[in-house]
Length: 363
Image 1 (cartoon, rainbow, N blue to C red):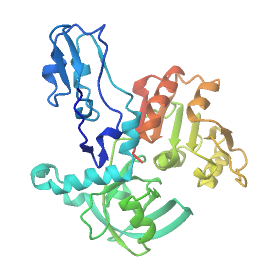
Image 2: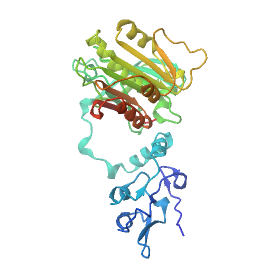
Image 3: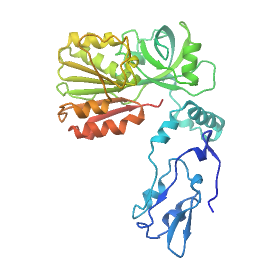
């Protein structure tokens, strides 16, 4: 009889999570590798039929696929990871992980890699723009005027980490949404996450004049293409922030740069913002093209001239257009769930995997 284990996974009851091994008995050769190798005792061994049996599926560690990786005949499979990725994007799961990390800090902290003090800058909230009910654009400027301030020299596409003042919570990461400014100021596009600790503070309590600790710049999602290489930029939701930073810098350096294509996807047309910026890029550079992709165009949505919008997914736009992208580099930013599908679509259109750069975020 199967033993039922009702332990939770990051505050979610384990029996609500669809994660367990499935054994193909026809392919199983009875080597016992999975039975002996599973420290959670998910398996038992049938010595008569010489087959591995899954007897305690709820004790399987969520996300673990060690048994499948070590099975010599590939007889073990698992449900798709999509459900796990979706759970990890929920605030309650993120908070449970954060709380456990903090509670075990004494045992888990690796003090050798604490950020160097000169990478943490005090910045002042200089402006807050409410774009829509779930999106704010925040402008931060350095509190101290330092000649060698790191935020004067960041690479477009990089991100920073911020802390809620006077709290114990861990930092949150946000991509910088502008090209470098001489005054060291940066723009962050912050989306409200239901019950999100940081975004709730931003929307409910942050005000102009507040001082915030900011670490950065960080990350390797930066432009590494040659000046004559065609580029396709793909953004999902607020993945537009690092993409905007990159395109803005490209046009600063070379206003006549050719063959730049932007595909931006959102759940509905309200997900598109700063469209006047895109319109200005189109007006100033005839070689720049932009397509907005959404499953729903809402009544009253005003689209700038020369910007195209389609009721479609980003994947469908890539697949259904007559694109030959074999000479292109690709830069993709957005939620993790969309990445496998976009990667596959881009590669079917001729882009090699090593020419696709990814900036993926949760939520």
